Each structure stands twice: as C-alpha cells, then as structure tokens.
Image 1: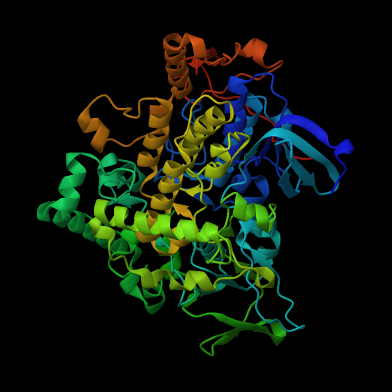
Image 2: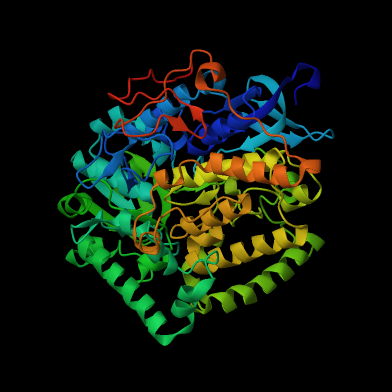
Length: 633
C-alpha cells in the first residue's frame, strides 16, 4: 500500500475506457467542465472490449448499424455488412474518435492497472496502481464493465502439453500464430465461441468445439434478418417485443394485463415465441447434422425466449453456411485433462491432438480489486455464511420479492430452473469461486447502504447485460453523474433494497442461467431506460404516436437531448423551490470548453449543430476527418 503522502489527488477517477467509461467521463464534464478527471484503463488503446488488441477482421457486433452509437454522435457508415452489422474495427474507430472529439484522450491513462480500491475514513477513495503512485479521488466511477475480467478455468495438464492456451479476448493478438496452425480447440458456448469458430473455419482450420453438457449450453442465436426481409434487431428493439418479454419493469397498464391475465393474451405470447424460435432454428439448420443439433439452445423449442446461455445474432456474414461446410466437431462434454503430446482428453473418453486452445469461457465481474470485506459491504457479492444477519435480511427480502414477482408475472412462476444448476459449480483459476449473481445495487448502479448514509461518492455503470450498450450506458451516465452531484434523490433504504431484491429474483427467473450470473436484461433494456429517465424527470416516451411507440424500432437518436431535458427539469425545480435551489453548471461553448478541441464529427451531415445545449462545431457538409488512434506509449 502506497503512502498517502505520495498519492496523486484528483476530483474524479473513471475506471474503464470503453462505452461506459467514456460516456460517464463526458457527462461528468458536461456538468463540471473544470473537474480534474482522469480515466484509467489497463489496455494499450481506448475502446474497452473493442480496444485494438481485442478485435480482428471477422469480429462483428451483434446489433445493426444505427443502433450501436451514442444518441448525439452518429457512427460512420463504414465496415458494415450487407445485413447491417458493424465490424469491430468500425466500433474501435468510433470510440477513439469520440475520445478525441470530447477531449478525453489527454485525460486517459492507458496500460494502467488498478490493483486495489478502498475507501478512506475521510470518504475519499484510494486506488493502488501497479508500478505507479496511488491515486486519491473524491468521486469514483467504476466503469470496468461486465466483460473485462476473463474467466480462466483450470484442468490437469501434462508437462509435455505445449499448445498455447488463451482466452478469446486475446485472439486479436494471436492472429499470426493462428494462421500457421492446422487445428484448434474452442471451449465454451458463449457468443465469442461462435466468433472464434467462424474465424478458424474461414481460415480452413480443423476445429474441435467443446461445450459442457451440465452448464448453460450453447448460445441462442437469432438470424441476422427475419425471412430475409427485416433486420432482427429492428424487431427486438420495438416496445411490442418488450411487452412480450415479461419484464418486471413493465408491469403497468392494460397491455400487460392482457398478456399476463387473459387466455388470449397468453396464447399470443406462446405463439409469438414459438414462431421466433422456429425462424431461428430454420435459419441455423440444427437438423442438418449431429454437430449442428448439439448447438441447439436449451430448452429445445424455446431457447430464444429463455436465453439461458445468452442471446446473440449471427452477425458475421454466412456464419451457418460456413459452419455446415467446415471441418468442425462439436463435443457436449467437459475437458478431463490436457495430456502428453498436446492431447485433449474429454470426460466422455474422447481424445484428440490440438495446436491451440481458445477459451470462450466468458467473463466475471471485475470486482477483484475490492477486498472480500468490501465486496460484501458494497453489495458486490453475498456473504459466504448464509446465517449472518445481513444474509438473513436478504433472504427475507428475496422471499417477499419472489411472491411479488410471481404475482406480477405469473408466466415466470415455474421457470426451467434445472437449466442453471451448473452455474454454481463453475470456478476460475486456482479454484476461486466466480462472483455469480447480480450485484445488490439499486438501479444496478449504487450501493443502498452508502446512499442511505449520505455517501454519493461512487457508482458502478456497465454491469447490466444488454444488446443496447451505448444508449444504456448514456442514460446510466446521466443518472449516475446526477446522483454523484446530488441532482436527484433515490428513495428510502427499504425501498432501494426492495427494488434490488425484486430485480435479482426476476432476472434469475427470467433468464435462468444468465440471470444467476449477471444483471441480465437482453429483452428488457427499454423498460430499464424508462425507469432511469422517470427517476430524472425526463420524458421516456420518445416517439410521436402510439403506433410508433409500440412498433417502430427505438434508435439511440431518439434519446438525443436528454441532458437538456434534465437541465430543464432541474431549472423548474429551482424556480419552484428557490429557497433550496440546485446549482448546476452549464457547459461552455466548445471553443471555450476545450482548448484545441477537434470538431465533433458528423457522419452524414444531417444532424443539428447543437448537442445538449452547446455548440459542437459540427461540419454539416462532408465526412468525418480521420483521427489518430490513441495508444499508450
């Protein structure tokens, strides 16, 4: 532990330079332009999971162009597939440009690894940094996200097993070596395993794909388009689909009552998901071979709805055609050991030689930098002793929440719990237990006990799993920064804990395997955004008509201007309660706000030259200029 005498002192530290960290930093600076704010990230470039070392040519986001951007900052139409999906390089460039345009690059310290985080008696936060002086801050935005800490299982390994074993997040740095091999082994059924298998098969490699038979199973994979006519993500991002997704955040109104309380409504729900699953199965061609059949998601016939191992889209061009034509053997069993001469031995007795092993075994929450005591205190993981007072309290809250969720969503009263049983047996390197279970955070961001004690010094954005990452992160950033600055007030401790319990019970029922691991909301991001905006007094209905509200896709641009709208809410409160006026800073025009700031880029020259109430210097003619990529020295 470094000396406090040598610690650097700043106002705000943001941990993470991905989608969540960048927008959190930008939003904080919108309200406090002069803040001494630094961004820390252990990668060599900006982008988080989309940093330069983690992308490769065949990596695509599983969401279409136009849906994967901040509301006020359009993405360039480059590196997009015929079906509208976005390449990893395009996303990396976008985030890099964003950091330059909003003057975040000079505030970002790359190749900076946080090793320990704790709170001082003064209420400030101390971060210990590998090989560098400690940093103290008044506010901490812990935005490392849910996909920054890879899970590395361990198996017995012979000394003569010399084949490299890497995690899928390292694939981008091993491309040259992978070109030279003949065969590879891919472990796991997450989205990254599909990307990795596609990369290898396209290169003509022999692949053995191992997915545990007692885990969550393979990913539920949607086709890129429905019947070749409508982009799948345009359908998923409609509120009509949200209403049929059984969200605990959307249980008011006649439509909900119709789907949950009437025979006709529940029949429509059943029929809708039956058709969606049939379309996905038909596109994948699971019946074409024994190997393909092993990739059919659980439970068979309804894997898309339950998303037990997660939900994705076949975003790479011709994924299933490449899989069916390639040399790939799927094994539904566990690895027993890595034997001599690079032999992989499986639990069913099968063995084969391999040149490379790539672990697509997912990610754990990156809370390891907090001590176990603080993980318990801040709701990052439950106590190991279920008989302690804190766990008894949560057991009571969860029992009450179970009844409430069953009453609100009777269709979830009997989910297929068996699907998630293998989750509790998963361990990582050295036998350390994975931090399974959604955190006990109000609105998935703040610690109820700290809030109740008047502590507004920390929030945790980005630990909710959603396909709508940029917009969720943007709204979380506004909610979180407003919380840090005292611009909105959460409810009582009891109400916050009740909300936490209901969410955690619901997500375990709704998404079974994934819901036991994470705050999972793959079909529920719009209701979640609604809740956050309502908290802030911002209008959550962004469409002009009821038809558009229900059936038109919700695009990030629909949420453009939410900071302005929140400021108007604050101004109204200030006017009505002059004795208790809230003071908040208006950002200066761009020319004064950032010395030498490059113009904010505009993809198509159609967007207004004003964003969130201040001039951005948009060029309304021509394309975005290139930006140098930001790398650590």
